[in-house]
Length: 351
Ligand SMILES: [Zn+2]
Image 1 (spheres, rainbow, N blue to C red):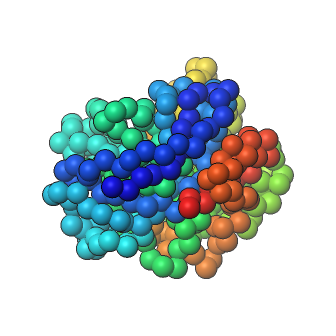
Image 2: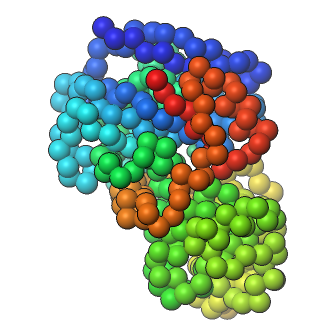
């Protein structure tokens, strides 16, 4: 039986330790994937720093790509775009496996199903291992949305798809038709950058990016933003759509004031504890404003994310968003670099 080397995380303050364990026999519906590249997401860094708590020991890393090595019994035969799955296929997969019969899954929110399994977030136990990207192999569970990738997408760019790109695909879906709309993207971090790229390729009339960091705003211009500013009042226009990725309370309330009649705000950044916001109900009512919240994404959004990357691989230099690559042996340096330098993404090659 094969073995897999992986970086075991025991909790904040501990160095990640490279370990090797036997790969178990595949169970019903499982697929064995050889990981090739993993990028470190902000939530991985928060767990590493102790800002966010996960059950440990664990294998971090959920922005993963790899190729299929083996199928367990009664495996899915096709990916979520309807293509036949076979060994050697390079794939991306959702960050979750969830029961399709769960009431929330049936409502279109599989990411909110009970007993959801999330790659890169699960505890290593006697029965459950190899569920994170910082490992040579991942065992993909039953009911995980999977999409086969075209060759034009590099491993590095592929790793970005199943977290930020799919989340932004869901955000844009909630925002509605962007054609001829003035779109404001709040925050020019990873989500905001993908947001401006998606808005600009969805025939938005204008795409504007708001951030306090001018370097990030410069990058946003390479990804579809036409106008940039440090304060919403600098734009001297109102917006039809606001995509809020910063999670900063004042940004959420101040930008609402800049919505046109019938405007839509989709909030996706507030994924950490927040104070209550002060919003004027009369303003919302008289201006026909809609506010929507989004967390994670569903299987259709994963497909949209792959379609978007494949279609725009030559339009935007997504590779530029991964500032540094490390080998799995140097995984601790990768985390320290990511925490200290705060680039969009740091990548880890998996041998
Ligand atoms: Zn993530």
